[in-house]
Image (tube, rainbow, N blue to C red; front, side, top):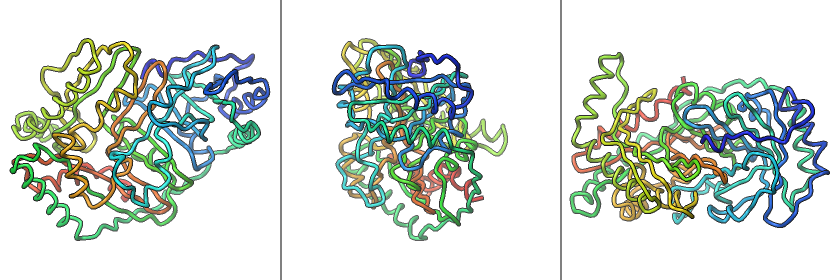
Length: 450
């Protein structure tokens, strides 16, 4: 996400010390903005010495907040409000007016299966795949910028009011409510029956792999704050892409995912296969042995190779040159470790972010193989709509993109939290072992309940 983090701000005479001061400075300059044409975004920026994006987001008006942070924590972007909302691909028709400034960032969040009827709990999350926020706060390294995106349809009075609210925002004392698991005891037997059905289809030759997901539900003693939940998840898992998509006050989808779908910087694209799982060991010796058993497992290597093949083929259709790791390596996270193989590509002229996302999503790591047959099987075997779980989530701009796969995630609705996890089923899978694997993946959410 290096290009997306490029800083080229419109300078102010004095650099505001805080984001609140930058918001006040931007509000005074709104009347001077002229939008030259339809489908044009005029972006106004102010550099600020404050760089705590999460603190800023926590104090922002709830209801339409968005957030994304790259795996290394070098770049993070937060947004408030909606300046433009478009489907993936249609967003590219919007141009940024000439002048200094970093490329505007579009937040992407798409459902795993757009053609499956939505469950009511996902209401409000599907209004649009790409959102350009009214107000954006971006940090790249130690440099931070507050920006507004103005179109011909922007209500400048409302935008000025939002900026005034941000300028007046103060730190709120957040008391973390206690979480209690409320799972139905029948969930395990239902899921194992689905695994056994999947194994029957695999043995019949209908498919080679199917990734089945399950849910774990919690109830809190008070309404949950989505930003606080994300911060707590991030404190337990530092090596992941962090994201938040808010549909309404108190209703949000959050997560810390280890899996990249695609990253683009200029004409260079990167993707990866992440599949095959072991828990982390209780000490360094146990951890090493578990990792070695994963690398040596024919079942896990086969499951992983199905993902590598699909990612490589999808990028090859968009690329002039392609490079793939010769062997998978271990990706060690807080609670689990995975096999990971990286794929790099130099893109053909004319290939954009929409084409890359559509080519790669969904991968066999979250759907199965072949993908088409797996999607049909999931509609029959999974008793719930995944919504945004396992879909693409990230940020796009003219200069670059970073899009992750929204796993290790949860849906928040007031005082309720629903966490998701999945396991890849292949010939030789043991249903009880796969259930335990999903349990390891859900440990981050168990930590919230402690």
